[in-house]
Image (cartoon, rainbow, N blue to C red; front, side, top):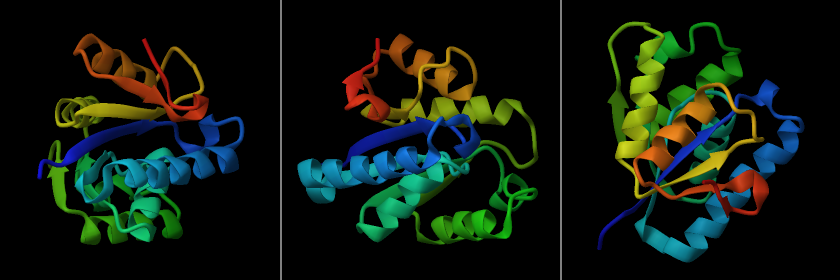
Length: 162
């Protein structure tokens, strides 16, 4: 049976007006999609703090498969994170179905490469986006729409982004 690959993009915690609500929406999205897709569901995640990690935590808690797409190795990505955030990323790396790394060293452009790999590898995208028309989440949404991917905003009742 073919996997249903769902790409995820979203803000870091400090970019949300209400991070606790956003975290709840991440968990709700995983639960709702698992109910719909069952064992064929697999998320494509970027590994960053915020929406990426929250969806990853929910995948682990709800026994949902996920692939990680990192801009560079986890140790570099999490170098300046809090211990809890770094430990969560390393846990997610150890439990992911597959690990994809855009480049071996820190380069800002690796985030863009990673985001495009997530979009290109996904059947559709679920975003955790509050409407700001700048930044990585917005650029990923634009890339997805330009490349004919369906984008659903989990912060707005899974409404389609056009």
